[in-house]
Image 1 (cartoon, helix red, strand yellow):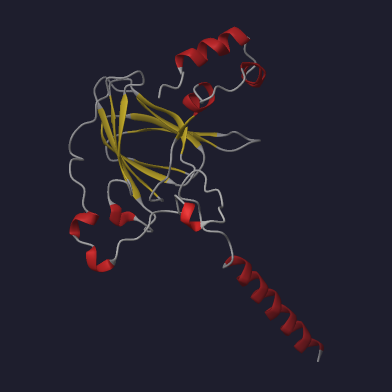
Image 2 (cartoon, one colour; image 1 turned 30 degrees about the vertical axis):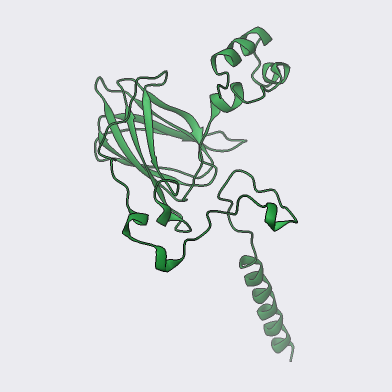
Length: 224
C-alpha cells in the first residue's frame, strides 16, 4: 500500500513539474511590451502580426545583397548588415536571423550583448580576436583567435566582441537564435543613453573622475 502511495506521489510531482515547464512566459521579441487594457490602442505584439497564408509568397522568405561589403569607414572600423524579421518577413516566429560583419584592418565589433539570442559566428576572411565574459561574480573571459573557417559561439545575454587582428579586411557571418536578437553596445548604452545617466552614478560605478565621465558622454552623445 505504501509503495502505491509513493508511486502516486511521484507521478503527482512529475505532473506538477511538467505543468510548470509548459506554463512559462514566451521569450520577448522586443525590448519592452507594456500591457494595455484597450486592444484598440495597442501598437506592438510579441513579434509581428501574421499575414494570411494565402497572401504569402516566396519573396516573404527572400533577401538579396548580402554579398555586398558593408561600409567600415566609421569610428570602430566595422559594419553589421542585419537580416532579421524586419528584412525577411517570413522569419516571424521561426527563431533565427543572420548578420554579415565586415571589419577594416584593426576594426572591431565593440563589446555588446544580444538580449534575446545566442550567436554562432564563422570567419570567412581574415583573423579575429573574439571573446565573451561570463556573468558576475566570476566575470571569466573566454577568448580565442579565429582564422578563416573557424567557428565560435557567444551565449545569449553575455558581453562579447570581435577584433580584426590582421593587416587586411576581415569578414564573418553569424546566425542568431531569435528573429530579433537585439543588440546593446555597452559604451553607447552607458555613455550615450537618452537622456544621459547621471554622471555621478557613472563616476562612482567606473571609479572615474566626473570630468572624464562627462567627456565620455560627449563622445557617445545620442544623436537622433
